[in-house]
Image (cartoon, rainbow, N blue to C red; front, side):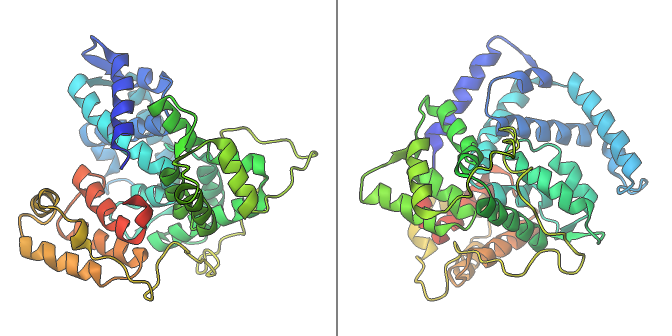
Length: 377
């Protein structure tokens, strides 16, 4: 979905390197491109440096949780990044992944943050999470609030499910406590990405439905779907969205005595997150409204499976074992919630040693995701 936007973004950015064989990372970061793409290039650069130069610094020889060591390694990493050059082939490969990552991140920040930070690991230390978060500047309220929580965290590890609850709790608090102006500021990365891609100030209704589904705010999703289906509004402007939000939410009024926080930090100064304890990190009252219950008849994945896609999944993910592929599809067809399906997909990637951010893994995940969130079909 949104493949045309991805191609548009890539073509625009490729025009910046006309005639160049080597592209400095610092130059890429200086371009007027979506922040989420800059975030990806930073992550990509650190991956290269870690594999080629800094591998020893991530070994068990050193205490990976020592704050001084983490700081020194980060300083060295930043120095090397400032001098890093990408050849054209590396850049073009990274650009394709950056465009897809950026689209995923702006539309599904909760899902993407959890996947990128944890990869296939069931748990991470607070220090590891904070270090990875340093590369995320889009939706910086997540980073700012998570760091505050994790610095007070009273355990040496954070489980994947706990981290997901932290993200959901942050969004719940944000939407309960900020003004309409702030709510519109928070969603601006979505509008910025599509404006960059399409030279238009409007965003496809489907994109905004995915964005609010990621946060579990189904009443907004339904209102946007109503505009799309009944009123034929295939695209929405920020003003259109404001009308919908006013209809469905009761945003907190703007308090004049409290100065508005900077645009790039939309919720840091206004949202209070309860202190997080070790054994009960977040309240267990989370309700993921986007999950479909067992009472809802979900479609069979085979209905969306064409021969070309099936062959790709069998070859790239299931190591050419067609029988195992169909076993997995049958298992997924029996699962009635996205949360459980996502965990099963993770187990597949672990079993077959698949990078969850490879093109084929992302495509497979999105293929299954559409069963639970029909707006993405």
